[in-house]
Every structure is written in C-alpha cells, then in structure tokens.
Image (tube, rainbow, N blue to C red):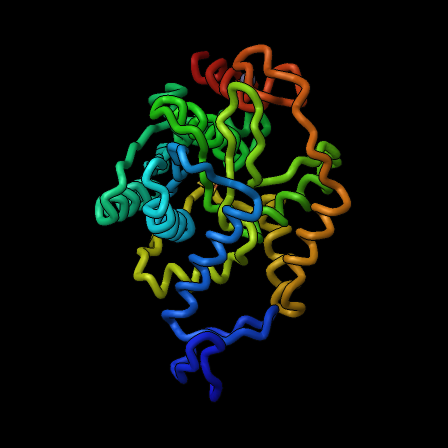
Length: 307
Ligand code: SF4
Ligand code: ZN
C-alpha cells in the first residue's frame, strides 16, 4: 500500500480502515480489535468483575473470535469466569461442522464448553420441523423458528450452567440490521441491543462486538487462523434480514462509516431505556405480549409434530 502502520510504523500493511483513515500491520490490527472490545465493555459496562460469562459460540468465525478475545480479557479479572455454550439445532453437516470447530477451539483455549441441543430442550430438531412441513404449516421461515428458539435455548443453557451474563458475537452490522428490521416491522419498542440491562430474574445479554464492523471481524478471524465453515446452512433463504444486510453492506462499501452513523442516529433518536412491563404468562421471560414468541412457536410446532 506504500504506507506505514499508524501505530508502529511497520511497512507490512494489511489493512486500511477507511472510516477512520488508520492503517495497520497484522499485529497492530489484532491488538486494536482486542482493545476496541475492551473499550466497548468498559464504555457500556457490559461485564462485571464477578461475572460468570457464558459466550454463545455457534462455531462460526465471529463467535470463535469473540471467545478468543474474551478469554484474553477475562484473565485480567481473576474473580470472573468464562464458559462457552453451543446450541445444536440439529442441522446435519452445517451444524455438525460448526460444533466440531467450537469443541476443538474451546479446548485449544482451555475454556470449558457445553453443547446443548434443540432435541434436549424442545424434543425436536430444526430439520424435523422443516422436513415434516411444520415450518410451512405454521407460516414461519426456518430462520425465524431457528432464531427465536436458539435464543430461548441459550437462556435455558446459561441458567443450567449458572451464568450471570450471556455474551454474543453480534457485530455493528447485526445491531444496525436489527434496528432497521424493527422499523420495517413497525416495532416501536426500541430497546438498546447488546447493552446490559438488569431485569429481575433475567440473564442479561451483551454484544462486545457491537461497535466493530463485521468485515473487521472476518479479517480478525482470518489473521488469527480461526477456522471458517465450509458448509452453508441449507435453510438460509432470502429473508428480510438478508435483504437489509445486502443493502447496508453495499451502502457501507460506498460510504464508509455509514453503519456507525446509523447506530448513533438510532441510539440518540429512538432508544428509550424501557423496562419490559410484561412477562410471558407461560415462561415468565420479559415480552411485549401475553405469551412470548418462543413459547408460542414451541407450542405450535409440538402440536403439529405430535398430530
Ligand atoms: Fe438457523 Fe437460518 Fe442460521 Fe440456518 S441460516 S442456522 S436456519 S438462522
Ligand atoms: Zn414464554
């Protein structure tokens, strides 16, 4: 690139961060990402010194990168502890490969790792739901069922291992996509995403990558020799999220820094730190409805599978 690393002056450049003008060599880039995660944690007070942190590890590059970085950070807090949780939805090949990557990677870091499955918690796999036509019958895309139930399974798993907080690998892109999707669905209950909120009886969720663009995590994973998946989920389809993701990715490429601008607008303009007033009548988790989405989907699916 004919320039030098903005931090150490090395001429072995690997990345030019267009939205800030910084230039990095490999070592300084990796350190910069870890430092930005530390700064995000402290800025939003995402973690506490006594936390038992459950890292949601799907086995994809983002979550393995998060595990690597949090493992390093957690060592500075001797009273905190860290474990990895993987939810196996039961998607042959795709999830099998991811679980294997997660098991091996957690082992290499020496982090305790727990695998729970949809079958354990709900009595069915995602594949059974799709192949028996239940997804069509209930009028929900596989990704919707998968996403809602994975979130539920993570909460159940975190409770089982006594975690005090769940850390997910959602990046800046994921957070901004979700805010856009909320708008497109007419959902006006804006609550901050990936920021710690203490609600009685609920394990908070935090996203330490919420200020890091997804493409920087891809680069981080690649430079750290983190395994990438070779299988693609067979159920991935043209969901609303994919459409929003494509639009935002193209926009960010043309106008670097747009994702940060969008995040800042959402959080300055719309967010009200509302406490959820309602609890699900069945599971007592916070929800805007009488029965939460996870309970509703679980019930509908079981009803049809048992017929
Ligand atoms: Fe689940 Fe959809 Fe992701 Fe596949 S692509 S793992 S169905 S959310
Ligand atoms: Zn519920």
